[in-house]
Image (tube, rainbow, N blue to C red; front, side, top):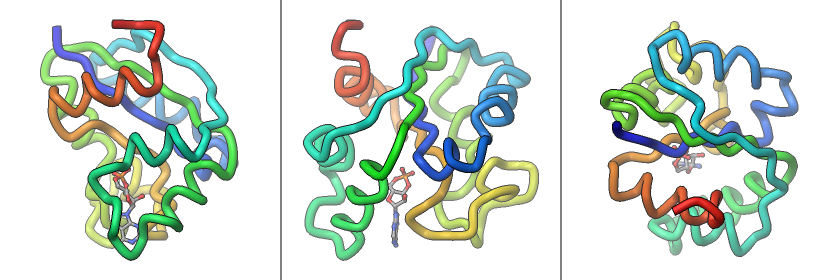
Length: 135
Ligand code: CMP
């Protein structure tokens, strides 16, 4: 069974969207295998987003991810990586289609409600960051 890492970012938590977001994954047949609330350190955030080091939005992204509570979720299911990304919608809020999480809720390039791993390799790397107790 494939697994992926989803984060409900601080804006999603502040806007009381946790239940709505998790329901959308579950409706598609994805199972919450593990879930926790985390106040990420800058080190965790930088490790998670290390592919973006050097980009002009990197520091803003780290400040945002460390600005409040994050819900970290391991989702399990067939094609979990692709399904979670489709449910999330395009990273750019202006391209995200209605019916997707970002299409329905996001209006900012950095604060875009959710994150989901972009490949099975990324999922395994990211799961180690957010769930170091799980192999
Ligand atoms: P995410 O899917 O978590 O992956 C990288 C994150 O960087 C992205 O969501 C946004 O939160 C942020 N991001 C990507 N592109 C930009 C951008 N051009 N300006 C600001 N933030 C961005």
